[in-house]
Length: 231
Image (cartoon, rainbow, N blue to C red; front, side, top):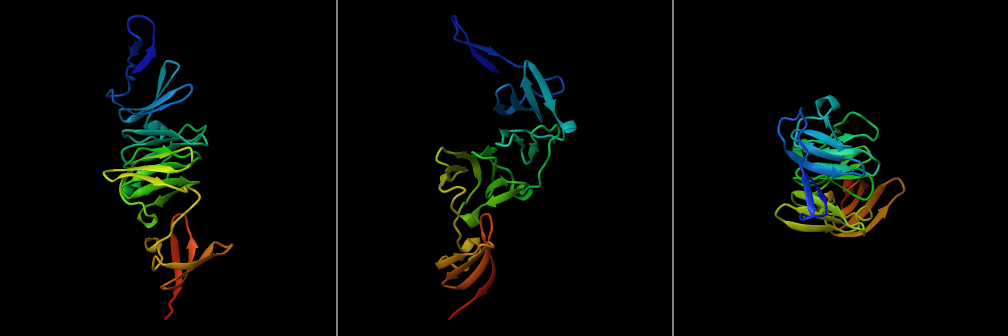
């Protein structure tokens, strides 16, 4: 439905855009409004409305059949769309959608596709977040202190992420892309850490009440590779 302002008795005019002939049902889902076009989920395919014309993207464009409820344009120009359990990408300037390998088969893409101020796409899962970093997904969940099923994410102008959880309220992630926290759930033997020593090669030494641990700093976790206990 397109709504425009007008003069006269009624301040608005309503115009229904008919469904394309090749679309079975007139259902509409996610919506992305850009400068010269509107993209939306149309039944089980993806449509682009531009210049009064509708272009349908379906299996011939590499797009699986699904209800496309989330559509976002990343900072690098790639177009992303989220279906009921799939997340697909149309590279900038490309004509065919790709399905990046993802953790959604086991976790499920439960939320609505979001993005940060950079090029990263963020998807809520049944156990935290999945963030597209470069060419792969990074998981943020219980090991980072985020518990629960994520529905929606919004980055504010200060850089913090606001995370909406299903049935568990709202969480603010301070220090996004700047700070990380490591606990026993991240791989440490204990939450009591006396001192840490990061080395140039990425190794991190941690002196804890359980001994001296050596690990490698990952995206959201500290993977312990060896430990020496003391009495």
